[in-house]
Image 1 (cartoon, rainbow, N blue to C red):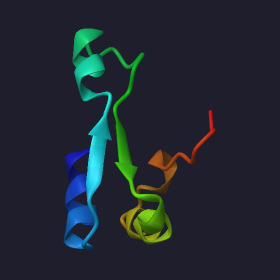
Image 2: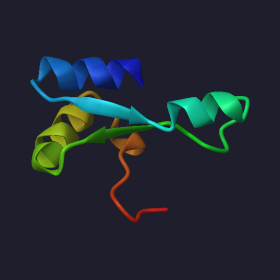
Image 3: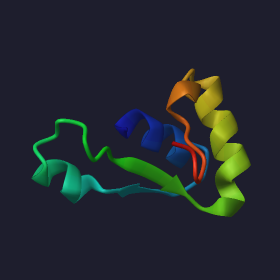
Length: 65
């Protein structure tokens, strides 16, 4: 998560970590994973940055289960 945040920040994008507190509350067993959110206008660029860093398997789009 931190690596992805740094990549996006270095590319000039802000990313927000969602569900961080809930993840801690449930004991970090993975039931409530944290999410890294970017603005919709940054989505395509953020996707490209993460794909280039070989993080593509971690990219989820809205509504994807």
